[in-house]
Length: 341
Image (tube, rainbow, N blue to C red):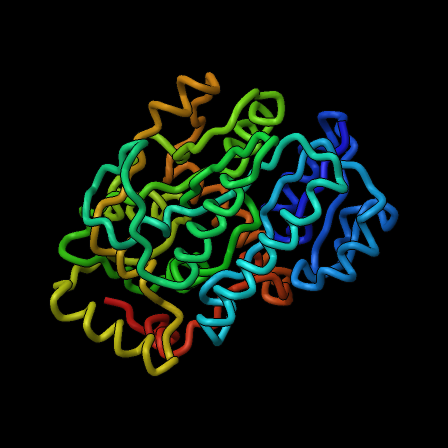
C-alpha cells in the first residue's frame, strides 16, 4: 500500500512518517520544507497552494491513501485571513489530485478548535461544531470539502493538542516557567480540565483507519483528564522545580490577555483563552467502539514526556524553526519568568 503524507516535515508528520514506514507501508512525504528524516526520493518539497507544482511533482504517482496533516496554525502567522485562505486552498488542491492518484481513502486531522464557540464541557460525538477563529473555520470547512468527495472513504479525526517528546510550541511558556523555578499561574483555582492527545495514540488510530472501510468522523483525545492544578503540581514534582502555583481571578486576567493578544504582544489567543477558562473533554465512546481503540496516557503523563525531552534537548530546540517543535515567542509574557513567590 502506498501512502502520501502531507505536512511530513512538521512535528507530528515526522512522528507519523516514521511509524508508517516502521509498519512497512510505502510512504511519501510532502511539505513546503525539506525533512532530514525522509529520504530525498521519498519526499516532495511543495506548497500545496501551488497546484501547478503539485501536479508536476506528484501527478504521475499513485497513492492508495492520502493523509492530510499540513496546516497553518494561528500563532505561526500574522494574518488570520491568509491562514484561512491558505488552509482552504491546500485542501481544494489536494482534493483535485485524488482522481489522478487513484486514492481510495483520505484521512484528515481536524481540530477541537472547531468547538471553541461551544460552551459545553463534554463534547459528544454528534455535537454541532461552532468555530470562532479562522483556524477553526478552516478546519471545519476543510472537513466539509473532504466529506463532499464521492467514491472515496473519508476519515476525519478531530484532535486536541497533540503532544509527545519534541512538542514545544505554546508549551514552551509552561516549560520555561518550570525550568526557571518561576511562579505558575492558574485561573480561578486551576480546576479546569482540558483534554490533550498522545502522538502515539493518534498513530494507532490512523493505523486502524487505514484498513477501515467507510467514512467516519471521530473525536479523539486522552482519558482520565486531570485539572491544570493537578498537572502543574505533578510536573513541578517530576522536574524537582521550586515553582509555586498561584491563582488569579479570571475576570481580571482574561480581558488583559485578550488586549495583549489584540495588540500583538502576547501569543495567547482565542484557543488558549478557551482552554484556560472552560472545561473541554471529548466523548470518546464512538472511536473506542468503531476502531477498538483507547488512549494509553493521560495529560500529565504526556506532558512529563514532553518536558523531560525539552530539558535534555534544550540547546537544539531553541534553534528549531518549526511552529510546534520550537519555543514560541513569549512576547510580554517573558516577564513571568522573573516572578517567583
